[in-house]
Structure formats: structure tokens, C-alpha cells
Amino acid sequence: MASTIKLYALSTCPHCSQAGELLEALVGPDGFEHIYVDRLFGDKRNDTMRELRTINPEMSFPTLIIDGEVITGFKEKRIRKLLKKTD
Image (cartoon, rainbow, N blue to C red):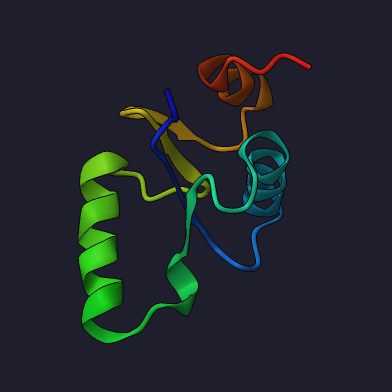
């Protein structure tokens, strides 16, 4: 069964880049939704910020959701465990 994965990131954040690179390696570039919050404008940005605030009230980046599990920050072991990829 494929995982539902969403990554909220900032384009200038090194930890966000690490999370994105790991996800690309594990599930491929089309295996997750990658949202660069700092590249959104207007209503789309406002809606995304509201959505993110309900998921992670601290609004820290990266914020990753894997099948409903929220991971804040780059936590490689946790990401691999949730995706059941330990290599």
C-alpha cells in the first residue's frame, strides 16, 4: 500500500532540503507532495499557513506528514521507520 506523504518546507531551509532528498530517494519524486510555503502567494499561502498551523502549531520546518503521522524537523530514522525503509 502506498503511503500518503506531504512535506511542508522552505526553499532556503537546509533541513527541508535533506528531508526532500531523503523522500525522493525512498519513494521517488512523484511519491510525495512537496509544498514550498515561502513560494506561495495570496490565498494559497494563507490557506496553507492555516492548514500547517493546525498540524504543527509551532510552524517549524520541515513539517512532514506520513499517513497521518506528523514529524517536525529532519528525523531520518523516524522517516525511514514510517516508510519501512531501513537501508
